[in-house]
Amino acid sequence: MLVELLVENYAVVEKVRVRFDRGLNVLTGETGSGKSIVVDALTLLFGGRASAEMIRTNAEKARISGIFEVASLPADLGVELADLGIGLEDNELLLEREILAGGKSRAFAQSRPVTLPIIKELAPFLGDVHGQHDQQQLFSPAVQRDLLDGFAGAEELAQETSDLFTRWRSVTSEREELDRTAQQKLREKDMWIFQRNEIESVAPQPGEDAELENERRVLRNVVRIQETGGAAYAALYEDPESVVTQIKAVQKRLEELARIDESISEIIATLQPAAFAADEAAQALRHYLERLEADPNRLDEVESRMAALEKLKRKYGSSLDEVLAFLDQVKQDIASVETSSERRDALEKQAAELTRSYEAAAKKLSAKRKEAAKQLGRRVETELATLAMDKSRVEIRVVEAPWSAAGADAIEFLISPNPGEEPKPLEKIASGGELSRVALALKTSAAPQKQNPKAVPRTLVFDEVDAGVGGSAAEAVGRRLKKLSRTSQVLCVTHLAQIAGFGDHHYHVEKTAAKGRTFATIEELTPESRTREIGRMLSGERLTPEALRHAEQLLRLSSE
Image 1: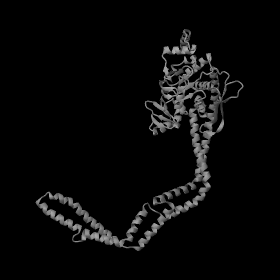
Image 2: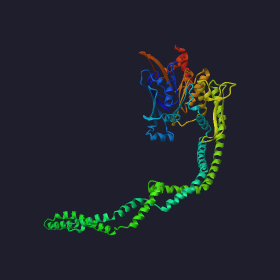
Image 3: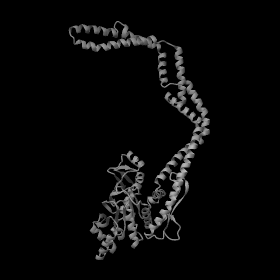
Image 4: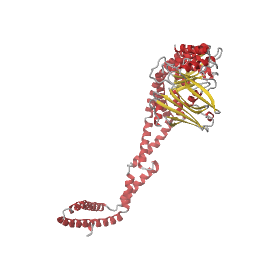
């Protein structure tokens, strides 16, 4: 539901802020006063095309912002917005569009930049605009299908059909892929077996090449290690001036001092770990040197093993980890080929089961749609008859179509506004007024009869819905809009007092000139000023007492 609309530097509007409420909101004013600005502004907020020509003269940019009350967002779209750090605040969503002088535009949700496609995804859940020559969402096949399914009470069945199709498509795609690649994989199997055997015959171990490289360096430098290690051992333990001997001498002197001053004991304790460490290091170095010996045969074995590992790495990966990962993949590929016939049989069986389930669900859904199409068509014709389109013929076609997530039907709403004409798609209707009345009839016919009073209604906008009607037909249009406003927030731009009289909230749009500039304003009318405005609409430029009395009577009748 639209709570507030702000328009800045747009066309003849310098700055207008207007709040809307539930029910039927009507906008009236003199011809050319700018009543359609609200419609145009909402069209932009819902992702409509922007143009630099819309910017008010001498302004750098135009800005449209709307605050919508929203109970919740669709799951997928909610997750997408959440990833952008966008969420509802007190069940309200702020949408903004800025039009720059160069013709480019920017979109924002909750003051965060978003792409226009996201705005367009949001639009159907916020509202719908039915303006002159502006078909909007209602005239798309998907929306028509959803409208029919909603009227038929088939939403759950349609979702079940969609889920079955998704599963069926996944299973059949996998089966087709198996069939398509079967011969190729059989040819590749021999190569995979060779690769597996080659790697397994070497049996590489993780990290083995690094260990062998270290062992090879040692074997190649045994003499140098023995000489350097022996010198280190002598300096550490064997020489008269070795580290161990020096530490022991220091300990002995400190012990003599400790007999004089006991506080020296702390220094002795600090030195003790060093003595232990030096002794342990000397013993470890001695054992290392004792085990060390030149072994040309072992060096040959190491270099031969490393050559075998290098060959594997050249062919199957830059490291042994990659080689082993390649081996795992090859084993999986071989197993998939060996079990492909069993997998295909399982997929064939699963596809057959899903085919039967989908056909049954799609058939049931199609039957519901066809029955609902007849009822909805008749109901729309009845509604149109009260909207000065009594000769109209409505046909909702449900014909067989290729399988899809939407079922096995193609749905199209057709209308013949005049006798003798073949029914045509809604978008082929020439008159914008007829388009708006057809949209009104469809919305009224398909709308639920009752709605939870706590539910948040969508916003439906009708521009020039009264084009070409008057008298009792105008009153009928007003009553239909009033009926529709029980389940949706309705904004209606109208020239007719008979329609304006049904409004729950009445706004007056006025254009004035000052200092060589034109300004448009929108003001919600009080009961008294509303009576005068409806009187003006009845009498024209000169407001007469008779027109005021007629306006008061019209308002009383409309509220009954």
